[in-house]
Image (cartoon, rainbow, N blue to C red; front, side, top):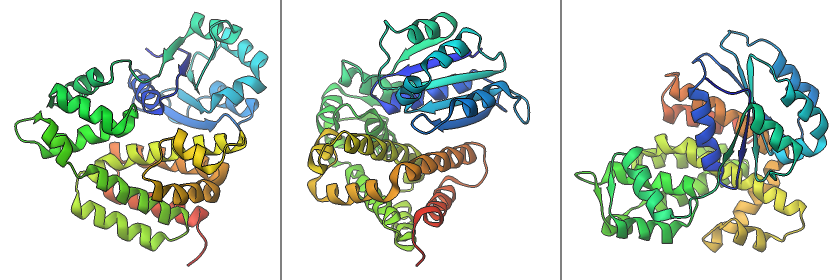
Length: 318
C-alpha cells in the first residue's frame, strides 16, 4: 500500500522515474496521476488535487518535479500538510537534494518515505544486475566495464543500451565485442536529430526521421519514451543552469551533451522550448507512455502523435 508522501531525492532522473513507477504499482490500476512542475505550481492547486476525489475512484498520485523550488516557496504550508496528509492521495516530491536536518525531511520520514535516487557507486555491478533482472541477459564483466566507460553514470542511456543488446545478442550473453559493435549510439544520434528538428519547428522532417528510425531499428519504439524523457530532463537541467549564468559550453560539458557538433542544436532546443514547453512536453510524454502501456494504439504511432502534438503546440506553421 502506498504511503501518503514520498520524497525522491537525488541527481538521477532515471532512478526517480523508476521509483515513481514502483510507487504506482502499489496503487490501484485506475489511480489518477497528476504531474506538476514545482517551479510554477501553486500550493493551492496541488492541495486541491490531493484533497479532491479521483474522477474514477482508485485514488490519486500527485507528482511534483523540480520540487526544490516548490518546497522553498511553501515550506511551512507543506510541513502542515505532511503532518495531516490526505488519506486518499499520495504526494511525490522529486528533488535533487533535501537536507536531513530540515523539518520537512523529518516530517516526510515520519509519515512517508525518503528514497535516495543517485547513480550507484559500483556502476559495472549495476549494469550486470540490470541486464539480468530487467532485460534477461548475462552481461560479462568486461562488457559492463566498457559500457560504463562509454556512457558514464547516465542510467537512462545505460538501460536503453541494455534493451537494445537484449534484442541483438544470441543466447542472451553480452560480450565486450557486442558492446563495441552495437549501433545504438548511432540510433541515439538519429533520435537527437529528430528531436532537434521538432524543436526547430520542422514536424514533417521530425516525422520522417522517426519513421526511418523505426524501420531501421524496430526496438526504437519501445525505447523512445525513456529516451525522450531523459532528453527533456536534460533540457530542463540546461534551463536551470542557464538561470545560474553558465555559458552554453559549460552547460554541455556538465550535462555530457556530445559529440560537440550536437551541442549548438541542443542549446537551440533549450531556448526554443522554454520552461513552459518542457513542462507541456513532459505532460504529453506521460500521456503517450500511459496509452502505450494501456494498449491504446501501438508505441510507434503514439510517438508520432507526440511529435504532431508538440509541433502543434510549439512549432511555427509550415
